Image 1 (cartoon, one colour):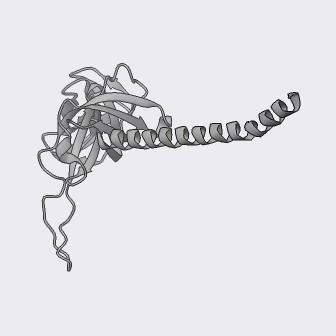
Image 2 (cartoon, rainbow, N blue to C red):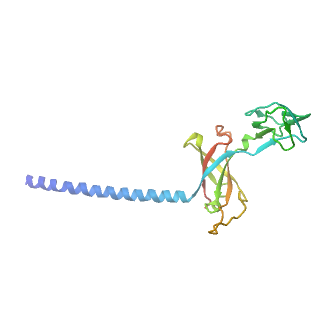
Image 3 (spheres, rainbow, N blue to C red):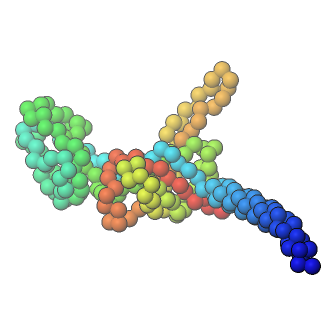
Length: 218
């Protein structure tokens, strides 16, 4: 009786292992399928912008009349207060119109400078934005001001930063419609600007390259 029981038990073991293996395989397949569908659902809710740059509007300081560049009192990287004298052209003193960061300074002393020629360029670091371009048929209509955004910066690898869409350009970067032999329209790109807390991310600098993921409006 004992031999029969042991023999029966030995025969059942492969069956139990096989059943468990099949069950595990089914669970893995189902789990993988759920993960795939979750990934597809997640990506369909986002617009990815591959080429973006951190930047702020540039303020160029130039003389009102032509003259010789006599002196420059600031250097790239200086942080200035409003109404700071930055350079002297002829008898004219150039002043900063607002506080900010100097990004370029013309040190070609003795050169002739005309109205409109930039002597010193500045930005306001608090106005830094992540600016990317989206093609009109690649999710542009799904992006709206106030949408949440996540972005990475090339200089910091995979570290993620957060912000919100601050502006969607009302016009494309290229308004001309060009037709080729195949009558295919030229792709139009629109600027999307993402605002972030500059005080929380002081390491982010003007000119850095970035990538953006915007969570689409549903």
